Length: 261
Ligand code: ADP
Image (tube, helix red, strand yellow):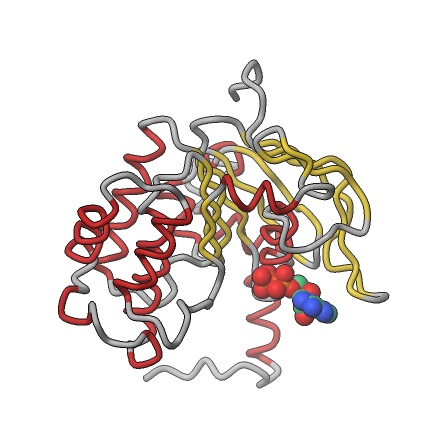
C-alpha cells in the first residue's frame, strides 16, 4: 500500500443510520493516489450508501470523512466540485440532448477545447447519431454512456463509480474498463462499488467486501483468497455466508429448484 502519500479519501469511524436502521456500521477506509479501490457486496449491503457518504451526497450519522483533503461533512459542495461521480441508475436530464448536457458539464468543469472534447466523447461512445435526441428518448445504455462521458470529459483525478457498467454491452464495458485502467496508470484514483466480482478481478488493486452494512474483509484480491485455487466467487460466498451447503440443503428441502434442463 502507498502509505506514505496523503490519502485521496479517508473515512474514520464513518457510520450511517436511516432512522433506526443501521445501513453502515462504523468503518475506516483510506484510498491512496493511483489506487483502483472497489467495494463489493450483495444487493442492499450498503454500497451506494458508502459511496454517497464519501461524495458528500449523504451526511454520516457519525465519523470524519476527508476527500482530497476537504472535510466532506462540513463542505460537501467543495468535495462534489472536485471529483467525478457516476451514480447508480441516474440519468442525464430528460429534456437536454447529449450535446447540451455534455457542454453544460464541460462548461461547469472549466474544460478547455470544450467543443472538441464533446465531439470526442460523442464519437467514443458511438452517440453521434443521438447527439440531438432528448435524453428521455434514449435507451438505458445510451443514457448511461452520456453519464459516463460527462464524468470522463474532465478526467477527474478522483472518480467515484456506482455500478458503472450495469446497462452497457460487453464492447463498451471493455472500452470503459480500458479507459479507467489507463486513467489509473496515469495517476488517477478510482473508487468503485459493484456486485459484479469480475470487475474486482480485472481492475481493482484493493477491495472490500461488505454485507449488512459491515466490512467483512478488505485487502488485495490475491490477499483475500485462502489459496491459489479459491476464486473470488468462493471468497464472496464464504464471507457473505451463503454457503454452497446452505444452497444444497435448501434444494434438498425443495426450496431451490435445481432440476436439470
Ligand atoms: P446497495 O447499494 O449495496 O444495494 P444501499 O446502500 O442502497 O445498498 O442500501 C443499504 C440498505 O439501506 C438497504 O437495506 C436499503 O434498503 C437501506 N436504505 C437505503 N437508502 C435508504 C433510505 N433513504 N432510507 C431508508 N433505508 C435506506
